[in-house]
Image 1 (tube, rainbow, N blue to C red):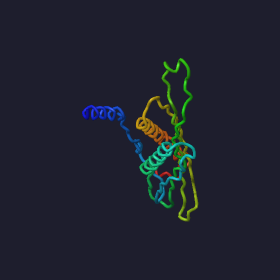
Image 2: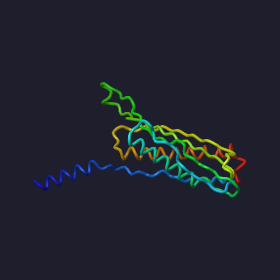
Image 3: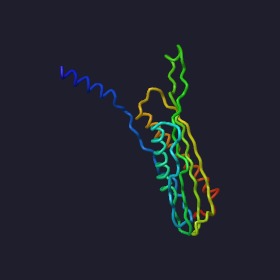
Image 4: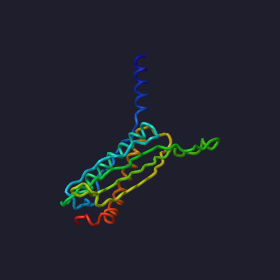
Length: 190
């Protein structure tokens, strides 16, 4: 009898284990760093957690903020000069929104996403002189949405969230490059 209980417990634990591996978002860029004529760079997160949402939404949003900060640390480079660049993550949210389900007879035959992940990321770059007076600034905001297939466990949903964060950082990279070339061109080292 004890063997059957042990075997049943093993089967249940194996069935409940997720096979999804969570690949962390890549927080580096394939491009050369954006080098600005400043003495130092300060990266920070001032994004507040989402007011609405669940614990998972707050955890995923915090992960996006940390990934964005890490990305900015590798993407921005002080090239010498006077002043400071403040790179601030002002918004970092990943929120799960449930979708309306098909009901009735067709529900049995139709497989559709359970929810959408909506992610937004905003970064503010400001250059201050030695006295702390802001001399230039630029703002970048990117957003993406990704469908969450039905029947996924939390770990598989986290893997989708991490892939979304990765895509958002690639989009941020593109926008950051364009914004630095347009709005901070006078402060680019080369």
